[in-house]
Amino acid sequence: MKKWIAAGCLTAVVIAMCAGVSFAGEVAPREKYDGATVTVVLHSGHFEIPWRDRAERIKDLFGINLEVVGITVTELYDKQMLELSTGTGAYDLLMFNPGWMGDYVDFLLPLDEYMDKWDPDWDDIHSGFQEWENTYGGKRYSLTLDGDIIMMYYRKDLFENPKEKTAFKAKYGYELAPPKTWDQLLDIGEFFRRDTDGDGKIDFWGYADQAKRGRSFYWYLLRYIAYSSPDPQLFDPETMEPLINSPEAVNALENYKKAIDLAPPGVLGWEWDELYSAFMKGNLALSIHWPDEGKRHVELETAVPGAQMGYALPPGVEKDGKLYQRSMTFGGWILGVAKDSKNPEAAYMVLWYMLGPETSLELVLDPGTGQDLFRISHFESGVTKVICPEDYLKTYNEAIAALFPELRIPGGFEYYDALDLGVQEAIAGKKTAKEALDGVAKRWDGITNRLGRKEQLVKYRAAMGL
Image (cartoon, rainbow, N blue to C red):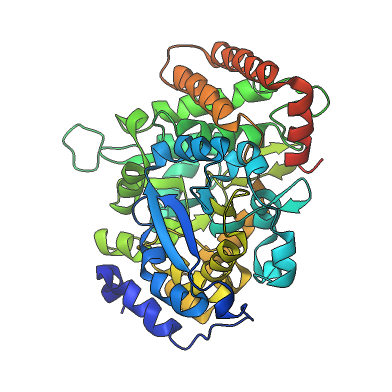
């Protein structure tokens, strides 16, 4: 059965196993929305497919005509913001990154009134997503579409190999295990970096990041929030002064640079596909990535005879005898209703149906959608437990509980871009970590001053739940 699933039949399995799931909840009378049109704008590609596939079902249930607009991820923010800021009312439902919430919130309709009337089974959504994705300033503005978190994947068969364990302990003085700290990760990166076929060229690596421009800042932030624990903040919550060039921040970036030096050649150009492929084809001992690998563990086991996948939280930093490990969403996707929607209630009903427990279970278990678990019921489903290893689900839950939020303030996109530029300068060896982060802090101050320091401070505190 595993090979059958791996061969591309998982979608059929999910549909068959979910066939007995009934559509629950009390919907508004069909005639209330009969003939209304709801336009949803989505990240183009695989995210569009389930919405197009269910347009007829939505028409049957609610009488709503669903129009799906796909926009490439590189244009999604700019095109949505253009429509929202000019008040065209072109879009009713918006798919966006939680990190854009600060820019979007003034253009979104608070959903509390609708949720109170038509409960989307709010309590079933993991509290980490409720708090750090859906809620802003005490109001609910979105529902989660894609339960992204970051976890660590490792080659369990290698880490439990007696010869590897003996050699590792002889060299480093402690037991070979999934790294608990970022310093231990460097040891893993060095130890497993080797020539496996004797041709004089390195062809297997201990670790790699997704380090392309536009992505590298996320893998830096994972380190930053650990090094800055126990209370990681990107800004001083009293003054809005950037903390991104603190001694802890510099240490985190220096660790990142050392990891890059141990990584495969070309890693500064790696995107999702490259990192996923490197681990799943057996070229890495360890990877830190989104939840996809765990749902598709059979791919690794099929590609590499004897391979076993293990799961753990990302590494952390030990301070005063306590280990601090955190995860992030690294983007993820949420949906909200535009304030200038011509049919806001109808738009909410589409949201309620698509992201409710029943439909969303089908979506997150279908590998073609690119969506990940975000509801408690997703984890408890018998279908999920057939497809996903128990250790994977356990670690996934732990990662959600350890989430650190995106920078959900106005200008979040700009702040992140400035950070990514600085990170790139450091990991490419163009600047020292301190020089690069001093430059980031200066650019961050410029963004803050332009948008208004007092206003930004208020938004930052609201976004961080302070």
